[in-house]
Every structure is written in C-alpha cells, then in structure tokens.
Length: 471
Image (cartoon, rainbow, N blue to C red):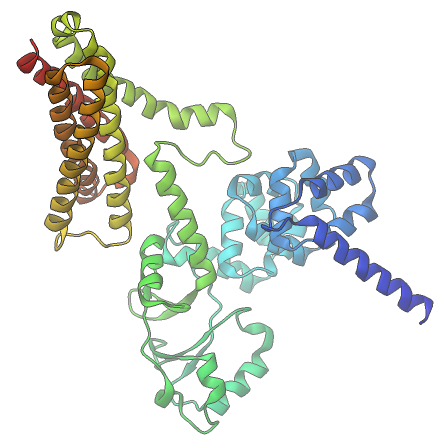
C-alpha cells in the first residue's frame, strides 16, 4: 500500500472515530465532543475545528450552535462552506439563526441561499434586517431572488410560505418516455427532492399526479393521462396547520400548491410537514401551561414578559376563588378540620380538569371533536367525572373517617368530590370547545379558566355542604 493510500485510510478511520464520538446512542450531541470544539476554538486550531465540524451532519452542526455561546458561533461560521452553511441555516432554531445571520457576510449568505430550496431561503431572508436583506437579495441571481421575493409575498405560516417553488410538472399528453427523458435533461433545474410528477393542463392547472415509483415501472409509450392518480391540491393561502392535517389524513408524501385560479405555483413535501407538526405540537403544549417557547438564547426579561401576564390573570382568578372561603370563614373557624381538607378537594378537581382539558385540546386539534359528536363526547366526560368522583369519594371518605372518626365529615368530603369532579370534567371539555367556537386557540387560555372553575366550585361545594351537614 502506498503512503498516500495509507494516509487516506488513516484519515477515514479518524473521521469515523469522530462521528462515533460526536453522537450518543440517542443521536444527541455528546458533551465531550462539544468540549472538544470549544477547546479547538479557544486554541485557534483551525485545522482541528474543521476536522471536528466535517465529522458532523449539518443538522448536528445546527444543534452544536445551540449549545455554544454566541462568541464561538462566529468561529464555526468561518469554517463552513456555502453548501454546508445553507443546510445548517435551514436547521437552526429561529432565535439562534437571527443571531448567526448578523455575523455572516452578505456575499457569503447570498451564495448559501442559492444552494437552498426556495421555501428555506425565504425563511432565512425573512429573519434578516431590512438593510442586510436588500444587500443579500441584490447579490443573488435574478431568478433565485424573484423566487424568494415571491415566497415572502405570502402570509407567514401559510402554504405559500411553506411551499418550494421548484416543482416537476408535465403536460397530460406526454408519455412516460418523454417525461423520463426530460427529467434527465433538466438536471439542476428540477427540485432537489420530489416524489411526484404533476400532470397539468394548458392553463397549468393540476389534473393528476404520477408517483416517481409508478413512472419508473410503466412502459415508455404509456401516456401520463393513463397512469396518473387523483391529486389533492393545497390552496396557497391555507394555514400550515390545516396543511399538516390534510397530509396526515390522506397520508400524502407531497402535494401541489395552487393559486386561487387553480394554477400550479409550487409543492409541499412531507419533510416540510414534519417540522410543522412538531412546531404546532410544541406550541399547544406550551400554551396549555400559559408560556411561550423561550428558546436557548432567550433573555430573562423576555421570559418574564411571556409568563407574567398569565400568572397575573391566575392571581386574579385565585382571589375570586378565595372569596368563597371568606364567605364561609365563620364555618371554617368553628371546624378547623375544614381548612385541612379544603386543598384536597380543589387539587383533585384541578387534576381531573387537566385530564379532560388535554383530551379536548388534542381532539380539537386532530379534528376528532366537532358538532356531530360533541354531545356524546361531553356526556362521556361528565359520566367519567362522576364515576371518578364516586371512587375517590369512597376512598377519601374512608380515610377521613379513620383520621377524624366523623362519618358526617366523610359524607361531606365525599359529596364535595363527586360534585367537583363532575364540574371539572364539564369545564375541561366545554371550555376549549367554547373557545374554539369563538375562533380562539383552545390551548392558550383554557387552563386558567378551568383552574378557576375547579377551585371556585371545590371551595363552594365543600364549604356549602359543611354548612348544611356539619354545622
């Protein structure tokens, strides 16, 4: 073996060792590898830093940027080729990308954008300051610039912003052979990733689609019109959450995007939808807790601003709920045991409401709950609330009797639990339904409202029954 061949083998072995070191078994970045990157940057070892970055997939480089302080990100950027930079920018979190873009020269960024799909490029350009945006667009070829500007003309979080304008289409009178020959000739003019050939009429309106797998299996003389399948069109102004629902419902891999007149303007592929589904799910989870995504680079003041309003609202609703206790303060003073057991009733009601609320928000988001089955679902949740309340009433009543030896107190807390869990189930299912009917996001403010209802009714039911039964 020659010396050059030996060196090449050694380099490949070293690269494989770095790849194994970089990621843990769950594909998360290894902290030891991050420390190696930091050490190379501190020593100014450009060769070592390049070697470490080359061992990573662009998605892992984007993840690495999130673990590093802002100062180190500039060192990383200097060692990324435009092709790699393009893939990294497409994978970065929005907050981190905005910081990174400040340090990328306009000319370098323009070259990177040329390597990106039009949808990803538009997202990056949208994060730029106005002055830098103008510089970057001016440095790009006219065709790529026009595609990005056209995408930016659509509303954020719509199909128009989500789609890529690169699309493979063919007239319905073409044969399989003509289509395959065209694909081979077109080369770089085609989308980087495509699954279907969209068959269009003379007005560029989709009339069907031929999956690439079907195209390759068909005879060359077969007409596209004979083998095409029905196509599910996506309106260009459709909300991205609706697009994700359509992809999930019809098990789509890709879909054509059309303007109001029906003209084909782009396509959406399943890799874009995966990101949308994850983004929407994260938003719903955070909204249920009354917070927004702080991100790894968020400042303390930004986090406080996003969370404080909901806590203030919760404080006001809690004050109203506590007013019930004040109204029964004489009864509580006569029987201090009531104050000991009061939080139990409210806590169990809150937990039960959270269960119903989570089920309702998920069902609304997945379109499994609507006017046609609302009565049945609401009724089911209420019956479940009464059943759970009855079981807890027996358990809690027995425990209270063992501790305090008062059967009437056991009866009181048992009835209070049944009432509160029934109300909790009703509030947990009805609150998000009502908000959805009003055109509001049911995940955003349902939790605060439901917590108020369960606390208020828990206090009222327990203290009211105590006043009637015990005093």
